[in-house]
Amino acid sequence: MGGGPELKTENSNLTTPSIVCTMLKYTRSMMHLALSRTWGCRMAAFLAVVSLLSIGAIEAAHPAAVRGSGGAVASAAPAATQAGLEILRAGGNAADAAVATALALAVVHPQAGNLGGGGFAVVRFGGVVEALDFRETAPAKASHDMYLDESGEPLPEASLVGPKAAGVPGSPAGLHELHRKHGKLPWSRVVAPALRLARDGFVVTERLERGLAENSELLARFPETAAVWLPDGRPPAAGTMMHLPELAATLEVYRDRGVHGLTKGPIAAAVELAARRHGGLLRAADLATYRSVWREAVQFPAFGWQMASMPLPSSGGIILGETYGLLERLDWGEKQRFGADRAHLLAEAWRRAYADRFLLGDPRTALADAPQLLAARWLDLRAQEIKPRKATDSERVRAWSRDQVQEADQTTHLSVVDGVGNAVALTTTLNGSFGCGLLVPGVGFLLNNEMDDFATAPGRPNMYGLVQGEANSVGPGKRMLSSMTPTIAWRGKEVLVVGSPGGSRIPTATAQVLLNLVVDGDQLQSAVDRPRIHHQWMPDILLAEHDALSPETAQELERRGHELGVRLKIGEVHAVRGLAGGVVEAAQDPRGPGAAGVVRPTVD
Image 1 (tube, one colour):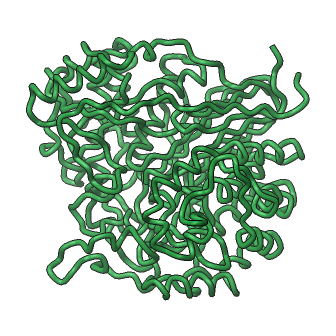
Image 2 (image 1 turned 180 degrees about the vertical axis):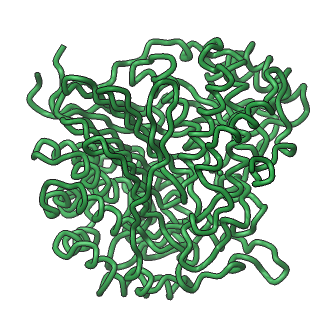
């Protein structure tokens, strides 16, 4: 047995395909590459891409997950994973470690880690499963048509840039509540690692430098943000030490006063002042009245396992449940691995699950819910629609209705399991990378741009290409629909904790990693590494990472009527597993890269 925590990090080897016929760009380079609708050009381009790039990775050997005992953590940043392991080593449980990891991400991973955003957590303590909703809400001054001009057309950037795009942050209340209900160590001890990183400094990673550079145009629009993250007009170089004294002071207040230190008093007043200065609607009263909510998790059996994921206002759990319900009915596990039949059925299942997403939103206004969409009769009807050798035109797929039967790319996910098997899957976000771009001066954190996750113009695509309905329209106090899918699965003594960032691609990335594990018996790291595909109803394109489909499989899918596109990465899944006898494993996604570690690593 080793003496200290082991961390594993890995650089991505994903490369940009250079041969495509047409690029359909939705916004801020965050949408997919899609190929031309001309069959000859589309097929020639796709086959050129997959033939130029090795497809050996489909069945290639993968490194082993980190293995040991005492607990495991996987997240998007080495310093954050180390913070979680530090808390586990200090005697903390999975909730303590999850909160410590999330707070550290708010320091070292500002693209998505946050105090100015929100998220969800699915937890399992002593065999009892719960879901914590700390999703942002619309400010009290929000209105249905606030992002439309006089002619009803969307106002450019209004729901994406600046504090008018910001929802009421839920992270301060949510992280504090998770610790209050399930934590074991004192609150001050759990906050300590993040506070130390902000006050004493952390090393800028290549990933952070790259993210800042890619978003420098957005960040430079706000002098308050540029002063911190673009000193001298450019990002701090990888390898340099970064200190965040204003954020450290905010964390000290959070440590000493808890949630009210951030949602009332000078910090809340500073948020209101910054929002007013740039035309935003956030007010101190919005922060003071925000509450996180414990909800009943979406639970369902799948492939011999029991699974729990997030309910509304996230669509993730419903999409996951619908996907698995359809795949089991269609004998997906019996089909040839990596073949066209499996890819076809995945696309057809997702096409229908995402069509039903059109009806979802805040639990108070959604037009359907998990019991209706996961009902056996509805899944039976959906399965009967699917033709085994012909793709369905998405325009012909209708969402659930009562008459027929009497759901940013820059999110971040962390997975934790402790030494006794308690588990937390937590996903948090600012929506777009660095949120709305505005850093609150004197406070040190960025505000989200989650208002774009509402149907700001119902029936039109948002920044992820998702077409959404009136159920998810803007309204004061409403929680915007999400795709976040923090998930826990268990069978006997074994527990799996998974989730991903990736906007609309979160449910599909999460689903595929779990299928690799529970159907095909992959080792944990192999399950995370394998290439992925994605479909979301609209746009009607089956996306694939560059080595996900062989040329023969791609050709067969085209023959069945699927339009294919290439995407460099689909999700970034971080996963941990607890096994019998206290053995734990952790795997990070090389698409990140992220970091995975265990408290006491096994020495081979």
